[in-house]
Amino acid sequence: MPTARLRRKISPRVLNGHPWVFANEIDSVDPGLPDGEVVQLITYDGKFVGQGYFNSQSQIRIRLLSRDPKALIDATYFHQQLEQCWSYRKKLGYEENCRLVFGEADGLPQLIIDKFNDYFVLQTLALGIDRWKPALVEALQKIFQPRGIYERNDVPVRALEGLPLQKGFLSEPFDTRIQIQENGLRFHVDLDQGQKTGYFLDQQDNRRAIQSIVRDAEVLGAFTYTGTFEVHAAHYGARSVWGLDISASAVEMANANAALNGLSDRCRFEVANAFDVLKSWGKEGKSYDVVMLDPPAFTKSRETIQKAITGYKEINLRGMKLVRPGGFLVTSLAPI
Image 1 (cartoon, rainbow, N blue to C red):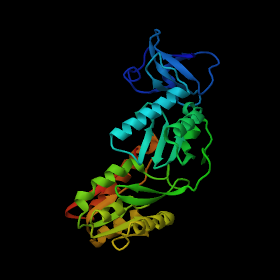
Image 2: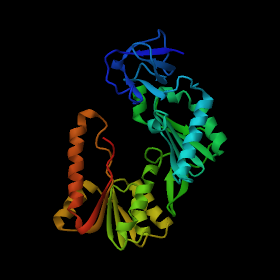
Image 3: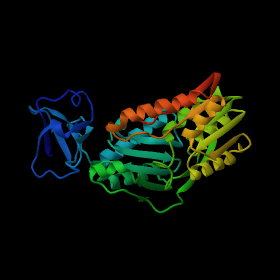
């Protein structure tokens, strides 16, 4: 197996378990090592650290897959990893919908797989894992016999790995506008046109968690996207729910989701710039029992983190001003 060697003086981060190895931490690699190849990482004095995939085009030169020197990284390895992920999700109570693979957290760096009932959406965000895409699809077919698998690799971060942006079918074609069930509700999901993998599955527990604070409440939701938090609020007994989003297509689907669950009488959405509306409504003295905010990511780089922090502070301050005494602010912050 090709070998990469760490520099003598580096932080203990990698040795302590972090799966990323940056360019300035590597002393040498075997000559002619192709990008995407699985390599053995060793310390400066030859001690085994782990195995991972290498990419000279990325600032993250190596992404570690295994700390086991005996592990054989092949199609069987990835099949077994997906089976382990599924077993773990089922222990947590997920059956229909879940994030099956959450990248580094599941020992599969830069791999995202979302399970929407019998449909799967896959993202391979690094060259090393992208090369194993056929093996991953084969494993999904064997483990789940899904109705369809779709690729949402139209993600800008792939360009940092020298990969093209693309999306499309990894199985026989199917209608990408599907319905899923979550917490006893039904939702329209567009796997092709929806944000990221089509739906924010990682928020489903948070959506269930609001039930104790929304009963008999007047609720305002801002940056609603397709209205899943708001529809949950209406389902859990809110007197009224008003949702705002700047995207007309998102608002259309949000209203369709409310109608799908028979909640249109208490849950409505309109197209509006939430930044401006929250500010003006605060000045007008409007108030709600529960205000829910789910703003988009305000930054994608270190250079603008401080500006993003200021933005999050401002938008939450505007939301707080609309909360009645004894009410609740529910806020979701995108990673920065």
